[in-house]
Image (cartoon, rainbow, N blue to C red; front, side, top):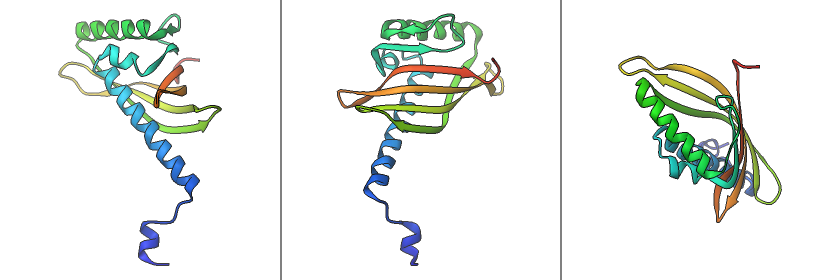
Length: 153
């Protein structure tokens, strides 16, 4: 075995294709969460399909569609400005399962960090995020999201 083999092992076309897909989905989530944390409501909502469903335990009922998604982000921004807290979302341990017709089922851990104004950051919530992603005009979009929290049954 040569040093080059250790550094660049051969990958099958299928492995290379999945690696590219995995990187695309990671980039999608990185972009989506940074838009959310920046309160860029309309651009964040545009990462979802028009008929999307967003089901999180911090809301009484699931949010449906882009207009409701954007409105929710704006409410979050007002709350954070009043409290002085800053929230950041980190996505990791991503699992991707291909579905039918350019559909992906993803499951990952979502950590929510809170930083009070002038304070120290700490983990606020540990969650599991399960999505159905679909391609819309060549770009990934979230059609359905369910978030569960570790601290709630």
